[in-house]
Image (cartoon, rainbow, N blue to C red; front, top):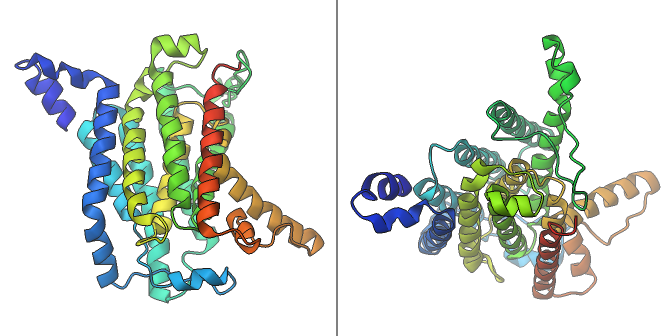
Length: 377
């Protein structure tokens, strides 16, 4: 909205406003706007959640130190979502389909998380939507994103080819083009792409959700991951840089840089209130929305595989749960003292603050490594 006003309307009268055509400028403004919104609205949101008695319920089998957190306002993710969406709409080009795809993703996954959190509040226990129902809703939302991206391939603004880290000339296509000559086989031709996109987005959403177990842990890692995605999105949309790095050049995804910048700003603002000891928790409305958005951006800029490095901490947290469940079902023994992984270190005697900071450091190392892979090809 402000982009349209300043650049398309007022720029003809004030040439200095031409600066708003640069994505870097609008990304910085979106990030600052998101940060200020989160900081300003934070106390009001926390106060409203307390008045509505929307508090966190702590599971009995978890670490005993967490029982003191019972009753802390949750569903603070509404602050993150609103502080991300508003700056994106203010500073993004609303004629760009990727802007609306990003807004759709964060709102829909946020709504799924909201329904889950609300169910927990109503039932007064740490159980929300059933796993099957939550997974089904996430999958449907992800497929909607995938279908939208498929429609963009016709205009040349998207590609179904994968970018594989470390391999410059290896770009496997997820669409079976040999089957497209027969219309009745189109569902089969597009099925690998749909499954892959849904797996990335749903997996990312749930991985962030699993990481959200300590004060500031998940949101701090999101700041790092979103920052890395901001860089990756910008270089993917830049003709010279993408050519130099041998990346797929997708100019239209440049507007997602503004969304990523807003994500960084809102996450930083929320961290102000979520830092240990937390005044508010993000809840599923925040973690599912953040994870889904990160996954969607990775898919849009063709860095789905690199997302495993960008969100390395999230991947480790999710893997710890998968390995724990598989080991217990197959052998009756547990690999970790408790999963997700951060609880294992809690029961090993690490203090909460030490775990959080060390996981942040690990997230930063993963993100820096992911950026170095752009040249190691």
